[in-house]
Image (cartoon, rainbow, N blue to C red; front, side):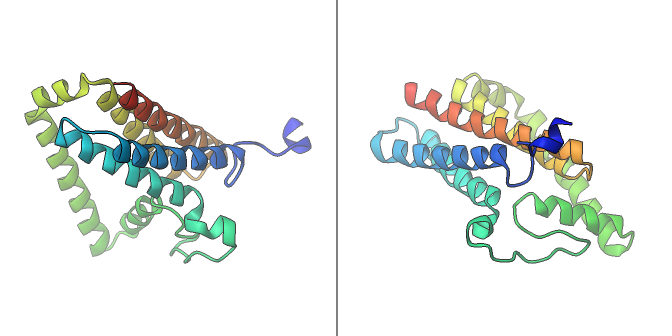
Length: 188
């Protein structure tokens, strides 16, 4: 009954998604400000911070459909329905390609399987350096951020309204996590 009286805050272009967009923009600006005002003892920290700042800007633009929400222009339509208005739509396109059952779907499935196998193999071989890398609070927070984003993309693939509500919550958590990671970095 409450949903009939007031709209949910967990809807596409709703308050939670808007808050996520604002936090991603804040993360991008905080990362850029940190890059401009700090000296870096390690080149890796500079590279990570530059990547985080640019990636946060991309996430902000993706959350606002690359300006379509503000300027009310149409995004390109996707085959099978929907609009290409965010980076997560690449996963939807790949899934739809695999569902066709033709030669292209086989090639896409094999490429994704090979990429996943290569990732797991490299992660296993580099487990000791990865463990050392993740002992740093900032690095661990970045891993949490990427994990939340990956969960959000997977949830976006499920065409059920209640799951889409969860997707917005996970994306919001990812936006909070990246700001938290940058605050950790600035503290050290």
